[in-house]
Length: 417
Image (tube, rainbow, N blue to C red; front, side, top):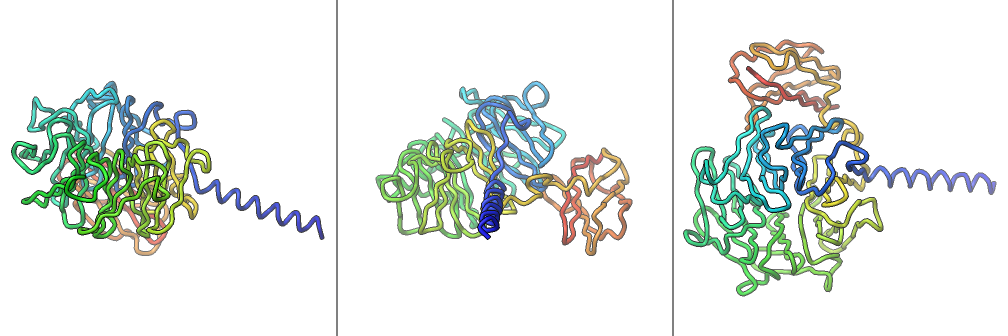
């Protein structure tokens, strides 16, 4: 009986250990094709592919199985540093070009085929040192720069906002975020937080509000609540009227330098810090994950993104890319995010027709084709594992083919010639 009890306890401990291990997955240059060196930024496109910006080694993509690396030597990327990435529509990629040595090269657009770079010499971009990019519901790009203030680009014309012509409090922009009302929130380096609704400006600083620092490094939203991360004052909560500050002295926040903020599906805050690891805050309780008490590979976090499975993708400056899910990382995340084994499209590139090969056919199989701007170009039901689709009326360009049913969602990129 004693041996049986010990065996059961051992099995329980083993199950707990396996579950704990399944909560974390770390990618670095030694166990994957992720480039070595500092990591700076992250974005996730409609197919689940991760776009990872580095400080010195270009841009990496990861679809759950395969890695691709883009740098100035094998692509149209003008610089080996990518400190900010934003995705328009399905997966039209916009990225800032600036390495850790502060060599600015403007902003680049990549549609899957063509690289287009905007600089002060060929566009209305006010500075080649781009720090942040946000895209509003109308497809306008809002670009934060160092020394040049804020720019708006609608794919045709440029508008610049700086201390001379607007309510911008400072021309050095750390971060930009857009709330549910399409209001722009701009965090500056020394000028505090600016709010812009398209007409009026409001500035929040240490001299006129409860914000704890004028160095604003991260912005997040939870409903109507705005969360502001600072470089030397911790975290602030603003409900439109009242301010609440959280720092290492009065809360469980592990570091006063907040680098990133993300809100999960339950409204829980996930806060990246410069040297204190990752903090989870549910409004009452704090939990800290760091390199000493978890599988987090580094305490220096530069970006956090939460995917559709509620998995947290954590970019660390010097430890690689980590993924964390308290309920266990779904197998789709661990193995193949895009379902490419289920879906094949041929020929690719194509002119008039494509053939859809879909092995996981079930009831209610919906085929959708999206442009890179996120516009749905076609939708129909699939009844057979192999179906020919007429795409002759679609303009030339890059498209995403998506097949979805109750069991799976698979996406593949195609080029229409």
